Image (cartoon, rainbow, N blue to C red; front, side):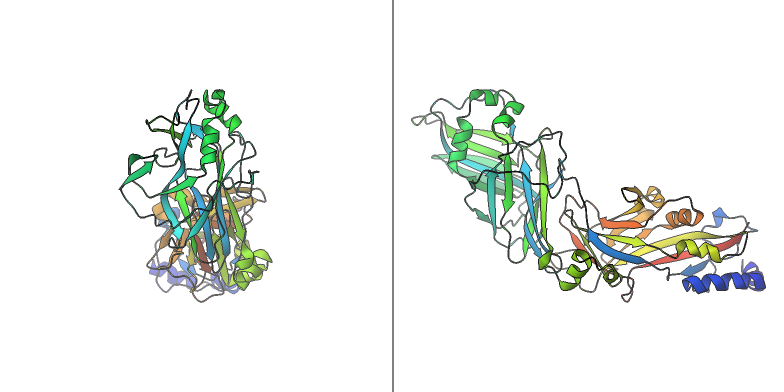
Length: 461
């Protein structure tokens, strides 16, 4: 192998070839020969492996356009202020589902209490911040056949059924015995996850219990008489958190009516409304970027793309993504002599955390990033490297290096060969519709910033 390298360096034409490639990309050769990718080449063509981490990357952050948020396994609600990216409010719009049909509350029904119970599965931010919840009855129909997106809104009636109820999430309870005393009767429930119980105005419970009996014949009939609820939190002025819940976990997230069939009845009763996969529900995300840092506003709001070379921003909840291009990549092959080719043995795209990120803060880094190829203005595709599996492809956050790394060698090779259409790459936080994470990345101009480390060979036909 070393002899072949010496023979290679002794040929003037190949020196010129290497020099031109270096001039374009400021490449630096590794002193040690390597054998990565040997299986791709015959022994007669194997020359050596070189290394560069100076491939030009042009990037910036931008807001995410339309994102579907209907019927997701996790929904979010709450309000949070990010000192860099401003405030985000997450609201839920949902239909309600009958727990049983042909319900008969009684001709003289008395509602003692109505409670909206939300089962929490996680959170992001400062859960010690006091939040004020608002619940409204919808004044506009929802449809299971419609798509709903992060900025969509629906009309609501003007009465806050929660009466400005306040809570602190503290979602760390694993198991508890919940005892509720309603109308002199104690109800006992075993709760296996953290919950929030929001007492609603009794008038709403009375309204539901006295609907025309045909409303309870089928779930669809009920949705024609009660369109559903909007669940939101008042915008916080500092800190705050976004709570996660799984709406279709029916033993946790439900609307509960505690009632008696008449004023003289001593028999307490309870009826539930659920959320199921047969119901329409979606998340609404409202971002106020005017409260963000000046650098964030200039890049993301004012579209000053040049600032992306210093720092990039990523935000879930239909917020912010990054766009990357490699403008000099295809020019690289144009520097080669006839009948020679570049073989990319390995390419690592490394996203390092900005120095302003604190792993120990409430705004922790994302678990995983997502990388998509931009095929044209309206379409994306996964990179070919993705199919090699997560252990090879990467994308997970390293708390040791405070970075995320992807292997994209196959993608870059296809671009060089002209077999992959591309207008760049989108980078976002994985599961951006169902979590509240955010992250700040050191751009290419920053010390030890965003870079692509490439190991490659130059071979002849």
